Length: 114
Length: 112
Image (cartoon, rainbow over all chains, first blue to last red; front, side):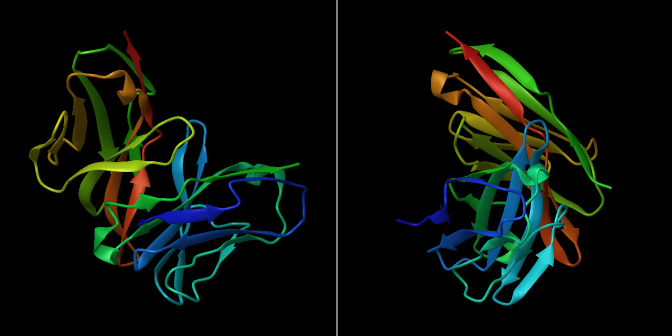
């Protein structure tokens, strides 16, 4: 089944404890992106990647890191999480850089930082 | 900068027709996408308009007027399962790459 997977789905952690949220897609998509969703704010882009080893900042990159060593994986790293990073996170992918108007989303990761 | 506006909430009756509007201000506009998100779920793609006019996909239609910086999503023969949030998203170019910027979403409440 073609899909985007994320792990974990739920995570409660404490301030300052490094964590990684994994994202993987099995559709051979070139484009991948991370978003956070907060009530009343819609989706805001954190980082995106046009292809392997190519990553760029989105609108809210502060406090996050990403890497794209393989085409299928695009992990999101929080080196020192803070309470304002409590949010619902989505990973998304799209076949090509020209097709980003249609993105396929993972199920989401609900992160709580205390 | 880029901005989108859509109503925060719309209420309609099962079987009726509802229109969800989206107005935008952006430079480098390429098109308007619509997504549906059920509570607890992920956004799923509904439609994309790059040119002016109406695009129909089953019970759902999407319209774009580039000159008015305006679009809407039209849902016909509403069903209870259409209760969800609907997001418009503008496709534009940033740093030579196509990107999406998202509206805050419209919660559609359907009453029997």
